[in-house]
Structures are given as structure tokens and as C-alpha cells.
Length: 134
Image (cartoon, helix red, strand yellow):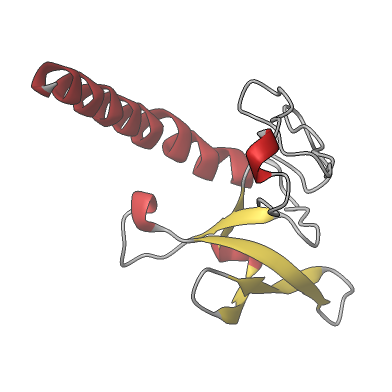
């Protein structure tokens, strides 16, 4: 069990190092290459901060966009896990996904019959049919 735990920890650390080195570094440069940052309501972004490392930047969801006097969007209202606040676009780094993209996401329909992990219908034993199982 210890061997498996060490292996999983090693995988986790390698993934974290690659994420920090490859993705976060490129994301900041990628965001500024697209000159006007086009944010959409509902988009997930990283909120930049000079005092913390990129790995510690919080994720936020765009709630509202506020245009300036020239009509261009200058400020966005964001919601993080702990608060809602306003932030200028210069500190926002959009993730590579849009709110409408549902790649790899399956729609789950609610069914009245409970199902197992293998998507088999769970049959209630006859002795429990008088009880309502949840």
C-alpha cells in the first residue's frame, strides 16, 4: 500500500510541475496575444495578482461586464469561491474554454429508478418493497 501511495504522490507532483511550467506560463502569454480580450458572461478565468504566484491565483466566473465611455469593455464583475468583486481586464486571464463548450460533458437525465455505477438498474429485494429506499 505504501508503494502505491508513493507512486500516486509522484504522479501528482509530476502533473503539478507540468501544469505550472507548461500551462500557466503559456496561458498568460496566450491571453495577451489576442489583443482585445473577449470575455463572456459565465466564462471561467484566472484572476491575476502580483503578490502571489500564478499557481495560487483564484479561479473566478464572470458575472457582468461593464463598458467604458468608448464602448469597450473595461471592467468585469467576478465571483470567486469566497467573494464577488470588480476587476479590470488587464488582470484577467481567460481559460481556453468557453461557457458554451460542452466537450466531454454528458447530459445526465434524472430517472426514477436508482442505478449502479455500471448503469444497471438496482432491483429492490422483495422483503424491502414496503420501504422507500433512497
